[in-house]
Amino acid sequence: MSPLANHTFWKMNGAGNEIVVVDLRASSHVVTAAEARAIAAAEGSHFDQMMVLHKPRTPGTECFIRIYNTDGSEAGACGNGTRCVAWVLMDGSDRKTLTVETRAGLLACRRMGETQFSVDMGEPKFGWQDIPLAEEFRDTRAIELQIGPIDAPILHSPSVVSVGNPHAIFWVDDPYAYDLPKIGPMLENHPIFPDRANISLAAVKSRDHIVLWVWERGAGITRACGSAACATLVSAARTKRTDRAATVSLPGGELHIEWRDDNHIIMTGPTELEHVGTFDAALFADAA
Ligand SMILES: N[C@H](CCC[C@H](N)C(=O)O)C(=O)O
Image (cartoon, rainbow, N blue to C red; front, side, top):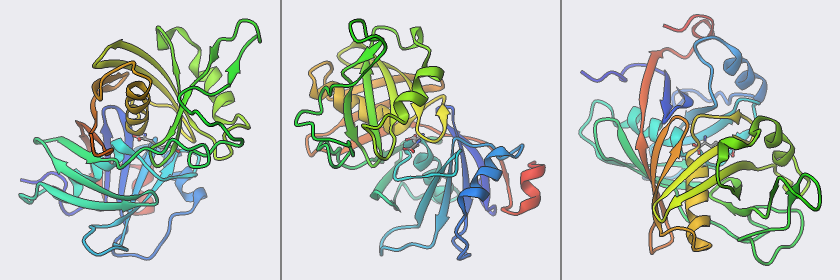
């Protein structure tokens, strides 16, 4: 029995990151920011990210995905949500691989187990204009950015990178020792980030283990952020803090990230189905 088949709405999570998947491949409707906010606010359809599937734009892909944050803004990448989409699209078949498209490009997905999926998140971009930053920084392994008193900053010198969306990673001993719900919004909206940024606090525990807590652009604190895990691993490897593969422990679970020699980042992790339904307005008031 395939648990996901014959529906157009799925409430899922990826390592605790709350994901709604909506299939609009049979429709030409494009969800507006206001609609996304209303769906996020309704009981039964709350999400950190909503993955809306549209008809494919590129031959060989299953769909074009629009990714919405809780605040209605759109993102180019969502690692945990992409794993959930892979499960939805592979469910009920013996397919093990498929490709989807987002604003950030094509993503190849692979089934690794019943509910375990890998996504090729593509290549990181380290150039300041690509992230983007508001001013030139030649070296994005550590940029001049700090909060707190000038002579005793609370956080400083993050690594910055784009993995389809912008990330800043601050290296700390214990992520949970900081008031991220308070600090996060200030850094997310700092003028150095013209498109805002996802803000991570990362503790390197060993060459292959990182503990991570994330304030997400447009969504706030989440229990896991796949693209942040990717951004953190490549930044850690680039600054010689870790090797090129590591387990990243987030509040909601663990992701395995590998930065391959061909420069692609492979993220592997769990997905979970919470409930299914049909995409119509009534659903959002009372999801089964
Ligand atoms: N939770 C996501 C990231 C969502 C993207 C986002 N908050 C943004 O860049 O606007 C993930 O698993 O990768």
